[in-house]
Image (tube, rainbow, N blue to C red):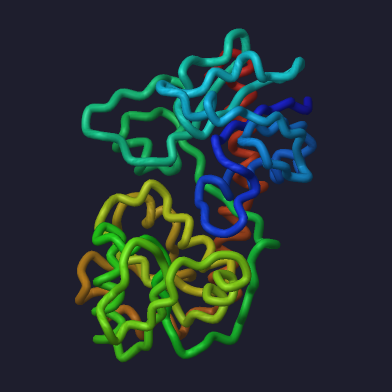
Length: 304
């Protein structure tokens, strides 16, 4: 039976350049429609994606203290509401769940309606359910032939490990492109700032590898699957959800900078088609939508 799903995120969708959760919500809508379900998108004025009917949410309501109240905005016939931020209250009379995309403070308690992004994310936050993020491979460029440079893509914050990427690439004898926001790295680093759209797709596809030396527990790590679907292997630390994503056919993992440096050369032997296959088999928008539909049906029947 087809479902009518209302998706909510307080942003303008689709996002034009930068955005993580925003892109995931748009991909989820696309995947649900491809599976034969109906989608209503609740988002800020100016939103509109071909796969969904859009209901605009006023900024004052979307950003009111305590969260939005979606009840008055829901069209008739909605089977389940799926928010991607906390709400002031569950919409009355409609099954509801929300996906937690962040990292919670120690001791924070989550309601049963919460869905995490990975098994590790769920375990650390005491959440019973999780669904891996997925992307639409059509939105990325695959390249079997790689360029001479490695890539770091993400916020230039210490928890993301960009300093390890710079040091590790240098010690591995690899040229590195650093792309991201927040600060400008030290002189001598090829820094291209925050990227999106075609520039981002080109960097991901041409990179010889993506450095993902996270120094915190990643809830998921969307950049990893963006690189892999482009045929680019990932060199990562064993933090958070990353061991759930990176396989021996799609990258390598270590616990220290020294281990990552020692592993870097091995990535050149990986087959870009096999790297991409990891995403096509496990992390597409349709796979994500399928997993969420399983949770929606349980919510509708009262089983979860």
